Image (cartoon, helix red, strand yellow):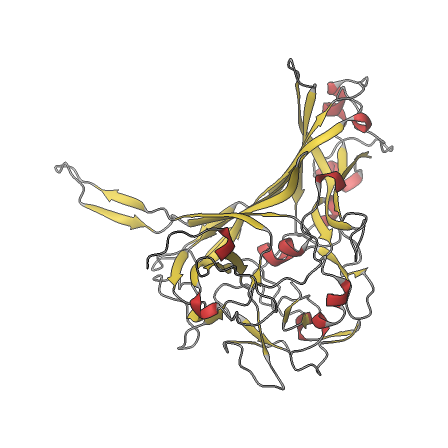
Amino acid sequence: MSRLRNIYQVEALFIGPAPATGFSQIDKIGNLNNNIITGSPANPNYNLLQNIPRVQSISYSLPVERNDVVQIGKRGFLHRGINYNSPITLNFEYFQNSILQELRLGFNANFARYFSDFNGSPFYSNNTGVSLLEGFVSRSDERLSTEFSWPLKYRDSRCIYVVVGREGDDLKENTYQEISSKATGLSCYGFGNSVLTSYRAVASVGDFPRASVSYNCDNMRFYSSGSGAQIPAINPRDGSPSTGIGFEIKFAIPSLYEPTGMLSVVRPGNITLDITALRRLEGYYATYRGYGGTSGLAYADIDNIGALFQDIKLQNYSIDLILNRKDKHQIGYKFPLDHVVISPTICNITFGAIIGNGQTGSFANILNNNDDYNITIKLKNPPNYPSFGGMTAIQYDFKRAKFSSINYEASIGTEKKVDVSFSCEIDDEDIGKGGMFMSGLFNIPLDYVTSTALLAQDGSNILFQNNSNIIANQIGGGRPMF
């Protein structure tokens, strides 16, 4: 009998580790391998594929661009060859309920540790002390023993999988398994050599905060099973399947499982915005980096925009991060060797608000002062959330952002509104001059984190010794924490 349709209940999205051409399994002592969750009782394997929860939409496009060859003396084409520089695009959007999704996408974000004996201490000493894009810019295969859950420092190119289950059968399972009990019956769309090109986070009155991302991919492969199949990554020389030393590199889809009690989504009523104008940088930064004058005072408000910022009624915000990339080619290769991020990387932040009280000032002062601004957006848990009530699920920090534009609008039947925009540069080599930073919680219930997530599958090998001896890349519960 033919299948009538596919609806959202039968689909899910999983993202693999970096690099895309590498192994998708790891053992408890941190060795990457190609064994599909076999290993041994003393040294079991764990699946590195991770689900992106709360996905609301998935779209992908497969363009075919051609190089048309003509010549003098002939009306028609001599040849219509394929242009291999037309990437496949993959887009998906998800509701935000923790920093978990952003960590799985590869952003270098700070997070609270509620496992072992850490009791909520941050992984990094402060939220703005590490570059958000470190893993996207670096091409290092360095192995960091203290790096949380990632085999390598490099976090860029990935394999991404969209799985489709049986018609009428929810994909969600009641327990976590390294290979889903439904894996052999899953159809899969595999996207190979996928690189992130944009990240956008938005929130507005009457809607849940959400994020959307876009990827460019070199290949898309179709599977009739989600267990033991070859990864969709390709060899850039000729587009053939990527292999190890004479063997296929395989993947397996894990179960789609979520512990009970996880926060469903952050509510718009639990979002706060703080913004402060700073003293302009002096000395080297002011002289050589284009910052403004040498005023020594910080301001409690944004001056000179005609509205008292402390009295605005925030209606929406948008955060837009674009990763401009350049394809690296080589003669004799059909596909790019790499898609490197081109600096500078700029993040844009825009707020829409209803205007309250006015304020005196002059726009010319904004131009003359060239002030820097610190902006913090916090998405908080509900006050009555069992494990982390009222705590910040996701936090965005923008340090030394620059004013970009302001737009006012008034019309009959609506309140007077203002849109204010800022921008900041993300410089992975010099985070001291500012940039964009992320932090937050996993929002996994404490009883789940402190028990199930800390034990190996055999129930005897504790994967966390103490806060000074973290082994197995902090894998727990038969899988990495994120």
